[in-house]
Length: 435
Image: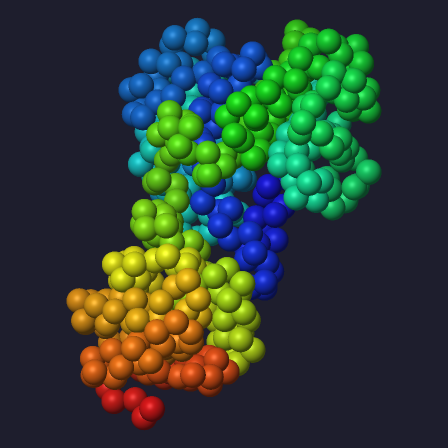
């Protein structure tokens, strides 16, 4: 269900970025989810993880079966329908021998997989999961997650598992069951039984009830925001397995989940977002040409809105927070300017807790150290604003102070367009712009 929110975040306007800081929460690879489920007493197929073709062949032999599934370990949905940049189709493949496992995994590992969620750039596949193949007769969907709409945790279920739950929710909302959970008492056996009956699993109620209770227990112990099993499947032997799983964990709990967070796969994340997190900066890459450096999520959204109002597009969401140092501001500029699509930078700071002169020092240090030629439009208001303006004026750098936000946004849009046109015709973007 989190994918619904993420899709909404990507496709909607800037105001949806209220949830931007949640994008830094920990996602783990499928094989990690399998391991956590096993530890919680929830069965999965037997599996192993390979970082080379030779390892994949060994795991296939050790599993001692001719029915195997190779799964590219990439943090993105739609892997089965995706394709690798080397032309290989499908990030989830059925194989029938260790030789075939070795051959196909060799074409996956080290290659980028492109799916509907990765965009054209794709994401690197550094390992594959080799698992025994199951033959499901029925498939179900179960998830427990923290959901603002329910003011806490909720159990979500459907008898239509094994497919995109977003599609099910859109086409037949009645097929999705929601059972809010009182966080003070936790998921009760009666609640679990009620959900199980609604999805048609009364015949194995005892076993499945324990699975749901274990899911909720793991969610609370691991500080998870989402534990999703899709599908939870019945195989030909009338036993039940979690055949696919996704989990997400709260970054605020990292201090007490150090072992879990050590499993973070930063190769699956935007390098700029990873760097931003090191300096406690909330950063998200967007598709526009105007870099934004703002303090406060609300002001950041308003800034992106006004850029859109004047016909521009923000290149990022970047909230430096209320206690950033000059060093953090300088690092923020490094991150913003690492995006080659940034043609202008709009700084919009309200100095409440944050001091404007600290921001100015960071801007000047960044512009000097990085030898920035990108126009910087700087709108500062609040604490120590006069000192900040004096610092900017005395720097003699290409930093354009503006007091009015409308004027600053309009100027940033026009300068971004000028720089874009200059780059299109290979002109030196350091030419004198008529300010």
